[in-house]
Image (cartoon, helix red, strand yellow):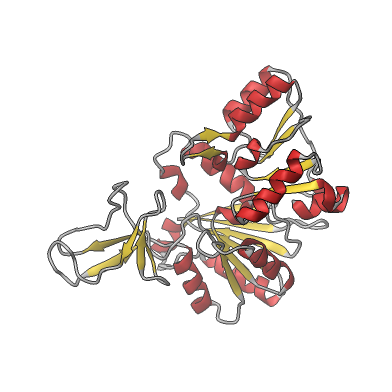
Length: 342
């Protein structure tokens, strides 16, 4: 987004605010905004507090995204603050999304503020979407996480030098670790939810509060060695892909691989410019990126998010899968999206 705005308005007019900036960089950007040297502020949710002097418009892209609400202290919702500022300053607030929240859509429709884009970029069409029931695959002996059709289509893409995105909205290697003798399951001391196993660090982590502990090979309760790992995350998916398609160049993008500064951009650039065949990732891979050579998107465990403890889980699942579907398209011919439902 920054590159696009710089190309249009010039670098001197753009200020950037996000958590990966150093304290010095953040201070410099803050002062540029305060002195009116920067006319456009681009940033994550905290950018809503930028000291803009003559604010004329606020644009919230992908307004359906849950990350606009901060669960950390101080708790706030950037969309609510934006609405307050817009009302106070009497200027427009634009909420953009291809899959807006139902309540947002309802309120804007009632206020006669709904603006609809009837055509997609370059007049492209949505790709063909196919749902594969993995229960039927299991009945004929397929015990892998890929349907036979998805496997064949990945092979076809590799042969034709086209790129593939595999989406699994679970990071880590296994979703929980359990003792098969006594049933003990490793849980977070703070959240009381199951800890996810991360093989590279050999640690168990809580994806809610960040708590982590060393992995165990002996049950803390009954001292049994019969420890088993269940569920699949992006780390395990990457390992399976490397084993199944050894000739393919793969790269993974989730919160574990983008922890370093500029690593997010590095991964995207590698996938786009260095002939990477398969990108494996969580919902990060559906954040508005454009990859012209991607003609296949596979969703693993597509229905898993419907069983989250969230009253909006069905709505969130629809938004997520629709956003994923938009990743596979071509200007002159339709891309293919393969939705593997486990």
